[in-house]
Image 1 (tube, helix red, strand yellow):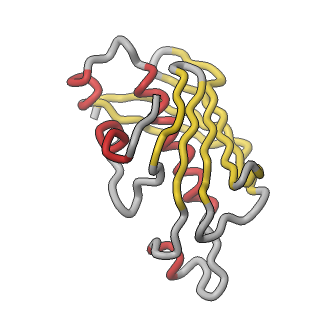
Image 2 (image 1 turned 60 degrees about the vertical axis):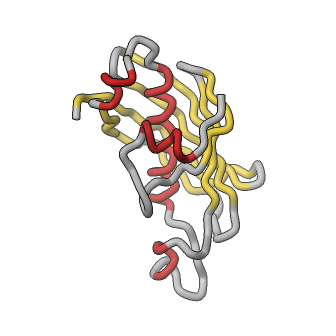
Length: 149
């Protein structure tokens, strides 16, 4: 299953400049998601991070992983109707073991690979990894809960 940005916006409440997943290339419900974000010099964050030496902030990488994890959680909820899903949102409860291994720069394609560690009801534990050209640039464990808006 693939999803373009229009389909992603039906699931996530985020919009420009804070929607950080451009496309989902693969989903295995309750297991994994692969998606990406194209990092562009025209993004507002590069005005201050850092002038003359643009580096995509680690916190933005983590947020992109979290958004990808939210997509995986919503797409895995087979027992939820489209109407019910429209009244739900994913809240992240914790981010643990975050590591940044290499800088991400304008022109990079940041690929998110998300895996389910475990799920208990509406609570999800996920492993997130981010790659550029198959090189691991960041990783973290994420915990999220699907709640009513």
